[in-house]
Amino acid sequence: MNVTVKLDDELVKMARHRAVDRGLSLSKWLGELIRSDLKGQARSNPSNLLQAIGNDELADFELEIPTDKAAIRDVEW
Image (cartoon, rainbow, N blue to C red; front, top):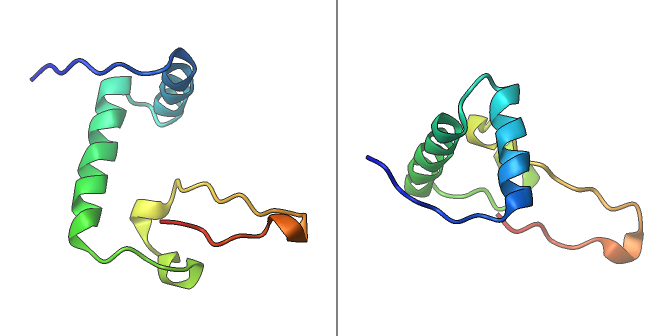
């Protein structure tokens, strides 16, 4: 099935690079992300880093660790 989705040009550029890095077309990569996300909704979402360790669905999750203590905040999943 074909679906039209409008995305920001810069976002598409970054997504294409991520897909190529994994040896996938953009369509295939997006399909895998959506499938993974839908499967993940059936499970409970981790509320902290310790719960997320070992979760293959979060293997590509990018976590920014602030160096400024004033910037430390809770991470939302």
